[in-house]
Image 1 (cartoon, rainbow, N blue to C red):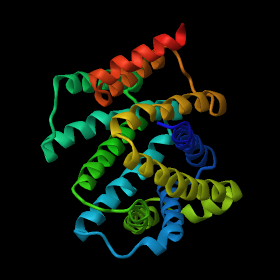
Image 2: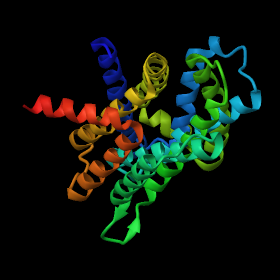
Image 3: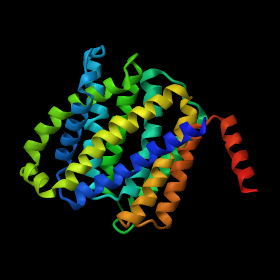
Image 4: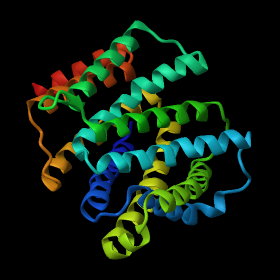
Length: 297
C-alpha cells in the first residue's frame, strides 16, 4: 500500500472514531433523541447524494432491505447504545461484527469457515464479553446489547450486499439514506415526543454534528473506504481499520473521560487479536510479526 493510501485510510479511521465521540456528545449530553438524530443524519446524506439515486439497483427489494439494515438498523441502535455506554466500550464491542459477518457469510453465502476463523471468532467474542460484563452487578451492560444488535444487522446487510453486483458507493449511500429516513422519522415521531424541540434546544452543535456525521463520515469517509477496498485486498484493509477502535479509545479517554481499566484493556487486546486472526492469512500474520519485530529493534 502506498503512503498516500495509508494516510487516506488513517484519515477514514480517525473520522469514524470521531463520529463515535460526537454521537455520544449529541445523544448523552445535548439530549437529542437517538432516532431523531439518526433521521436527521440520513436526511443530510440523502440531500448530499440525491443525484446518484437513480437508476435504482436491482433487485429493488434487496436494495431497500440492505439500506435499512446498513442504515437505520445499524446507526439508530448505535446511537441508542451510546446514551448509556462509553464510546470506548462501543468501539470494542462493535468488533463482534467481524465474527458475525464471517458466520453469516458461511451460512448464507456458503463461504469457507476454517478452524483459524473459528478460533478468531471465539477470541473476539471472549474479548467483547469481557468488555460488556458488569462485575459489580453480575449482568451484561444494557447499552452494549444495542451495539451487538447493530453489529448483527450491519453484518447481515453486508452479506446481502455481496449478493448484488455493480452498486456504486454513492448510489449505495443514497439508498441507505432514503430507505432509512422514512422509518426513522416515523419511529421518532411515535416513540420520541418533543424531539424537534430537543433538536432546536441543542442548537448549532447539533446541526454541526449532523452535518459532520452525514457529509464527512458517510459521504466522504465511506466513499474513500469503498475505493480503497476496490483497490486493495480486504485482508490488507481489514486489519488496518483496527485503528478505529484504538483511536476511539484515545478520544474517549480524553474527551468523554471513559474508564479504561484492566478489564477493558484485557477485553480490547483479546477482541482485537481475534479480529486479526480472522482477517489475516497465516502468511500475512507471520509477515506482520516480522515487521513489528524489526521495527522494535
